[in-house]
Image (tube, rainbow, N blue to C red; front, side, top):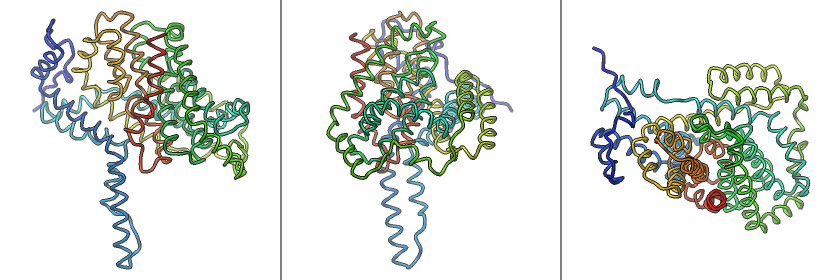
Length: 477
């Protein structure tokens, strides 16, 4: 006997229109029409809550492992991995949170609508193009030729500041996010995070400066992709539907974003100027030139220009075909063959980090596609300024591309409201790890510099000043 395939999730147009009713009345009406809405959002809320407790699970895992090692030593046994500690550590990995919570979600869908509906939703309704693209572009951007090219290019600018830690910090946090408008935000995040790790985090800055750097990186990358219409995920969602091109983005968003990035970075630099001076002095005393490529590449062959050019071609091909997974995945397979043939000039490819980030985003879109029932009415109920701040706050709990996509489903939005929702979405993209698709990549690459794992609350507090500066640029100028 075959199960009947129903429309799932229910289209927004299928809900009854309730003109003049309060937002709460509209939401309660939609729950009454489809009670599963409440279940899907409750599971999503638990997943979001889990991300805030990830560091607690990691800390508990360390304590359990330490106790296990003590017991083994008392019995004269060699230390070994505790299964309980391993499970707790797995629960503390932020990148797996949303994937884990898809399990109760699929069980709930199956219980409410049957396995056929659940299977069709996961396999035939949810679009995984963005997670797949992020996996491929992260792997490409983290290769040795691309990183060395970016580092070499930025080094010439950093030398104007005598290549001090502060000079490198300023250059990376200003230039790399703006590159996101041309090489895509995930690629810019990957390159920025890798260079920050090499040129700054390895110098062991204070926890406060680490969080400030991570929060600023997230905000700058989120708004730095708005110079063009094809590089930032939240802009991609609306550009074709609303007929926005690069001149429009540059005139309405780009120049404001560039100024906000420069101001925010300089403000943070001034706030931590004494620590930057101390890091520079410590580096000079230790006689360690982190900016010297020979200190890092002395065991590897120099990269011939043609190898770097081929890498650039693969990056360009991937970006140009970002909406066509069959093409960019096929291109990536050819790229793997090329790296195999040029092993002498390559470092080991990192697949773990891109795959974890892709898993994170895939889980997020599975949950996010079921939140339209409440996000769309919330957006529709707000004024222009209210829509800006509403989308800024909502972005902290949903991927900002989801917010802008849902805005395209709201009929009769004025040009001012369209601009407001995109401004809010990119402004709030640095407040949490889940706020912007490239953020998990940054956390995955820099997470080892934070004790246990990145604290969501500390990240939020660190990103707020840069977020407010971006808001001021977008709404007051």
